[in-house]
Amino acid sequence: MLLEIKDLHAAIDGKEILKGLNLQVNKGEVHAIMGPNGSGKSTLAKVLAGHPSFEVTKGEVLYEGKNLLELEPDERAREGIFLAFQYPVEVPGVSNSQFLRLAYNEKMKHLGEEELDPLEFNDYLTEKAKIVEMDKAFFKRSVNEGFSGGEKKRNEILQMAVLDPKLAVLDETDSGLDIDALRIVAEGVNKLRGADKAIILVTHYQRLLNYIEPDFVHVLAGGKIVKEGGKELALELEEKGYDWVKAAGN
Amino acid sequence: MTLAVKETIYQQDFQAKLENANQPAWLKDLREKAFAYFTENGFPTPKNEEWKYTNIAEISNFKFQISNSKAESQTGELLKEFNFERNGLTALHLAFADFVLVTIPKETSVEKPFEFNFKAAENEANFPHIIVVAEAGSKATIIENYESDAKSFTNSAIQIFVEDNANVTHYRVQKESAEAFHIGTTEITLKRGSFYNSTNINLGGRLSRHDIHLKFTGEGGEAFVDGLYMLSGAQHADTHSTIDHTVPNCTSHQTYKGVLNDRSRGVFNGKVFVRENASGTDAQQSNKNLLLSNDARVDTKPQLEIYNDDVKCAHGATVGQLEEEELFYLLSRGLNESLARNLLTYGFAEEIVNKIGIESIKKELDEAVLNRLQTILEA
Ligand SMILES: Nc1ncnc2c1ncn2[C@@H]1O[C@H](COP(=O)(O)OP(=O)(O)O)[C@@H](O)[C@H]1O
Ligand SMILES: [Mg+2]
Image 1 (cartoon, each protein chain N blue to C red):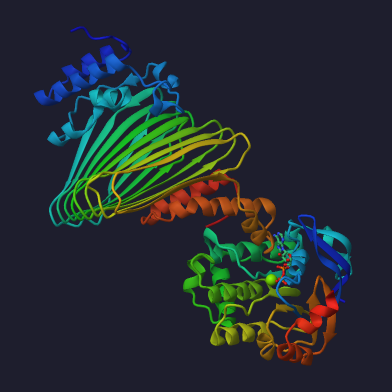
Image 2 (spheres, rainbow over the protein chains, first blue to last red; image 1 turned 90 degrees about the vertical axis):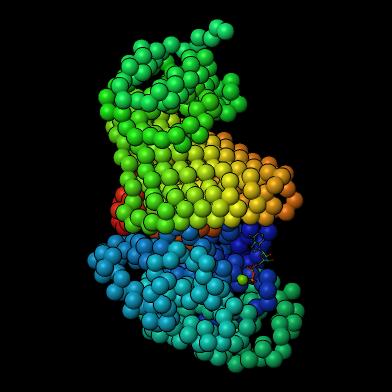
């Protein structure tokens, strides 16, 4: 098992958001986590990535059988966890390629593999950019600065492609995308699927799941998983809305 | 009338300077006036509001050597427009100034930058003075480069006249030794439809102060007055700037950034005046500071004085640490904490350095910034 979350409770500023969440993810699987706004989806994503504002008050998270919660955010990343942010952060003055090469090389160093110099990395990045049909002009630009909403999301998937994570958590990667961009991003994600990797798709809407078929759908409400099923559950949610599952969460 | 005699430290040097042959009577006269002002007023002290945060006792208490160059350089009547009566230092500057005059002829675009390199020697005082006249419709780039590798004293000035529809790019890089003292004055006059774009980089100096006085005198002018001070150890850097909108429809942008480590101290005082007559003014000013240590300190004071209703103005200042969300973003990509912090700091400074359009200078500054951060980042 790649990831095992047991009775996870997490709080921010003393306010409990996650209230006993359980989830199991195996290699090769794609899991969708759906739920109404404010149900704690982003909180789960950030807790997995190690955001310092959230405090885990109870429960356990095992990643490859080891305690994930004792690792720093950067250690988690080097161990293969990747979070595509719901709101990607702008980093003025630092170029995309500079940033990505540093991140890539940190991981290579950690794995004891060869680092790439700027020229080699440029070739590597050019290949990866094709996955999300991203223009080379974005390499030189400051990370996310002045990018449109859709470009930022694409840039997140480019980062995912470069870092090749074992566990990718994509937080609302579909929001703010028009239909063409959604298709490009979804196809990109599909290319990054693999038997030795897993993806957790966090989304409010069913529409992304038309393009990336999940193996499992979990519904999060009130800080807990309140319903689980196969991909057909997403369609049911689309039809009925969240009210009927929300009730179950309370 | 008897003059109050306050400061005699450079009296003999001044006599020698006056005896120097080859200077026109008007210049000799001007120097005497300037020196009299200095003698009467002495060096500025923190009692003066404009010098409140910058104590130059270390300059006034030390007798620097003044080299008496025989070669009298070229100057012009525009020198008379230089306001030496701002304080004792500007007066001292003019009394001893060595001149360079650059004229860019009408409608001429000069590709190759005019580059001025000044290197101060140990215990020496230097007083370079540049006059740039960009005649109507001309275009040029000016580079001022200040270096030193010891305790030295530079007291420099530049006057830039950007005439109708002329375009001047100006880079000023001060990377003197951390023992050096540096005083600089920049005066800019912008005429109708002219454009001026400056980037002022302050990396060196034990104690440095840069005064900028920019004045729009013709409609439709536009100016960028941007800068960076990046300090460590016990360095102190002060920027005082005045942007004066005296005529309608001019635009000014000012972005100054500070990165302060250790016990260093920065001062930013930026005044923007919009005079009664200056309708249609657009003036933006910001000063952002990053404090990397608990002992570093910044005193920032952006000031807007507006005497006209038909204007668009904004100003602001921030003093703070790195943004937590930015830091987390970098960590979440596998960068360790010190690398992430350095990269963010680098990015903060690079926003200004990236303005520099000359690759060789930009590269050198990138390296200087990285050196400051003591990381192993490569370009
Ligand atoms: N930084 C924060 N400070 C305080 N409350 C927060 C913070 N971030 C999220 N919350 C609260 O946590 C709850 C869950 O938010 P979130 O995880 O973002 O939900 P979702 O992603 O499902 O929309 C909400 O009630 C939200 O207001
Ligand atoms: Mg969310």
